[in-house]
Structure formats: C-alpha cells, structure tokens
Image (cartoon, rainbow over all chains, first blue to last red; front, side):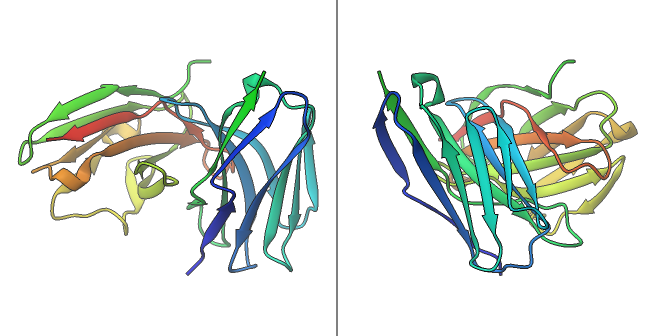
Length: 112
Length: 113
C-alpha cells in the first residue's frame, strides 16, 4: 500500500527566506505527483504537477522536483512571503487510477 | 469561470441524525470526487463519478454513507445515521474526464455532537 509522508509537520520561517518542503513515498511506481496549497477553511489549490517522466516543474517562486528512484519530492519556495503561509500537501496517483493519495501536509508560517 | 460550489459550509448535528452535503462541479467537468479530510490529515477519497456512474466507491462506508449524481452534474453525499467519528471536512472536487488536475471546493465542515 502506498504511503506518503511529509516532514516536517510544521515549519516557521522569517520573511524572505528560501525553504524546502519534503515529501516521500513508499512505492516508486507512480503516475504523477502534485503539490497543493490549502488555506484555513478553504479547499485545495493545485500548485505544480510533475509527471513520472519529469524531474522538475517550476512556477514563479515555486520549484518542485521528483526523484522516483529514491521515493522523494521536494517543493522549493524562494524568497518566502507572509502570503505563502498555508498548509502544503503532496499527493500522487498510480498507474490505472485517478485516485490521489495524500500526505498529511506541512503547515508553513512565514513571519513578517 | 465559477469554481466548485459546496453547501452548506458548516453543519452541526446530533449523533444518529441524517445529514446531506451538496456539490456543484465546474461546468463541463465530467469527473466528480468526494473526499473526507480529518483534522491534521490529508484528504481521502470516498467516491469518484464519471458522469452518472460511480467508478470507484471502494472507500465509501456503505452501511451509513450514500451518494448520487443525477444527470451527471450535481452530486449529494448523505450520512444516515451520523456518528461522532464522522466529524470532519467533506471536500468535493471535479476535473475534465481524463485530465489530471482536480479542482476542489471549499468543503463542508461537519460537527457531530
């Protein structure tokens, strides 16, 4: 059974700092991996999607990498801002299924 | 483009009472998902619809949970009777058939007393 782990569970950083969020998974036979953002009381917003054949994706200050062989993905946030404060979840799908398997998330706080 | 709409946003009920949640997906999205999110956890899929057909309901506790998607658009998720452990956020998401990006609604936060 696929298990997705996100460490740390919570992270607090000062504004302007670059940071990395980690996601690991137990079964490397994945179809794609996504990073989502969830604000309190709101739904999830997809940030980046990496296909299994890709190594990374970039959008603005965000860069996500994928290393299937080691079962790891990272989300890099450059020059963090207070508006980046949210919970970040990684989720993946496996071949033949559109079912997303989520980690528990990392709650990020960026302090002004 | 309007996003996924869910109602109600909050619901408080006593245990053993029935409750229903409603979801209106993004126009043109054939695939609809219901997820359960417990506090401090990631969402877990309850059921997935392709148009009117439930194609994956393996995680739906069928003794008390039911869902329908009449006409392949709106969907309702029902719990009868509710238990204390059902307190959670119920998320609805939709996507174009075969697409990889799911769009989530704001969720319904359920509290069972």
